[in-house]
Amino acid sequence: MNITSRQLARALYQSLLDTPDKEGEVVQEFIKYLEEKNLIGLLPSVVKNLEYLQARIEAQDNIKLTVNQQLPAELVKKIKNFVGQTNADIEIVKDSNILGGFIAEYQNKIYDSSVSGQLNQVKKNLLNSKNNSKNN
Image (cartoon, rainbow, N blue to C red; front, side, top):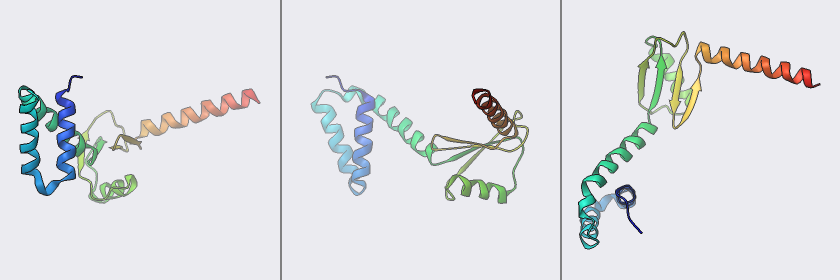
């Protein structure tokens, strides 16, 4: 069975999480393992995968907020409460296609409170009710 640099990165990451007070020892044992298994050539790839994994994990803890214009701090605070994460960092992305409202993304969930998103929802609801009334 071939071991990939991605699998090695995940294993190292998990080991570091499990024993945060022994970081140096974990890394030394990991390198020793790579040498014993003749996998030391994968080390640069393992490091890249670790960086990618860390970036993904950090991004999940941030709220991406897509807006047309700068929002007042009080509204940003309410959005944090709305998604249930008051301590999360906010990444604000300006998009001129947003006519009003906002789209918030947090931990792979999308909260679409944009004007176009709300209009699409109304349209969907109207079509569903129209189809339901035809069936009855």
